[in-house]
Length: 87
Image (tube, rainbow, N blue to C red; front, side, top):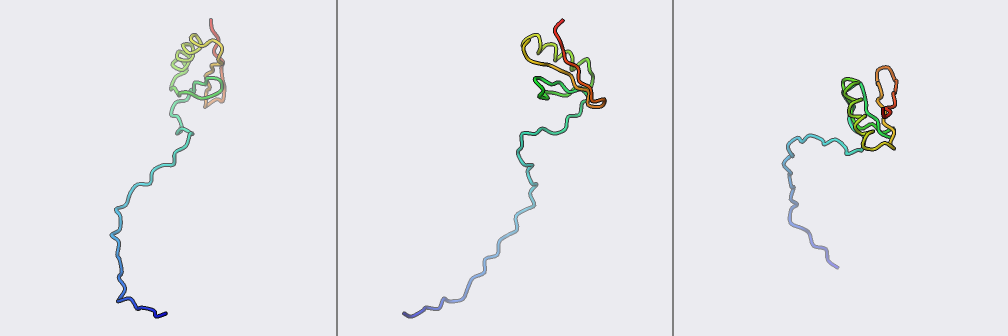
């Protein structure tokens, strides 16, 4: 069997790709909330609010529509949670 010699080798130079931003990995965890008071429904954080009154107002609306779920407002600074009850 005879081997054939290839005529000269070619060098392929690739143009460097422009720098791209690396996308953040997709996760289920949300970014840190900016508000102090967190609204929790069945121990799952749903939203963050700056004032307790705003979180309590939304929580009371959820509790009126769905009385069987547990709704609470968690204070992230004092590490205190208050469960919202219907009046």
